[in-house]
Length: 141
Image (tube, rainbow, N blue to C red; front, side, top):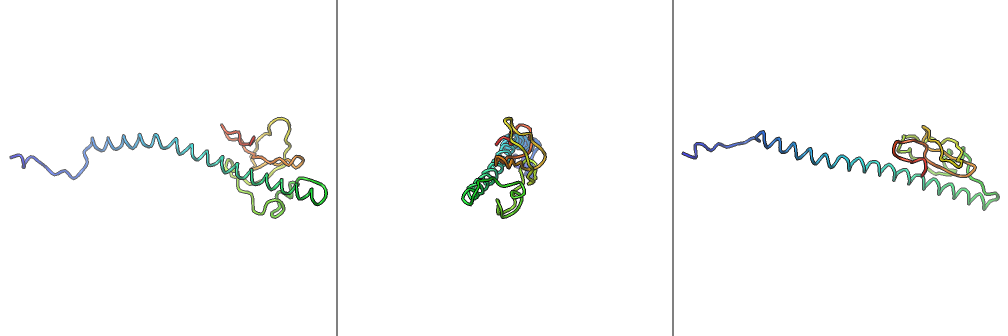
């Protein structure tokens, strides 16, 4: 008698599907902010690594020029010429996807960010990111 009332269920019930959807929504609600945080951290790390490499290359150029005569920083043209300061092309600025270098002047105040990838002050040998991302002060690194 009881065997006839037992049916074999091969599908999910509506309640089971709703529970699964709720669990997935909770998991994604936790995971998405973490993912966004990782992407912003990755951009910052990539930008800082590029700045460190270029600033080291500028310091090497300055030291080598001091050994051969007068210590000078590379000009903007030398910065843009492969094999003079940098051996490879400059990676794109992760905040605006540009690897262009523009001439700029570093005053006592922070530089104004622009649309190009990087800014360079040849008189002082200063090199910085040239973008303006909301919530990030990457042009001050």
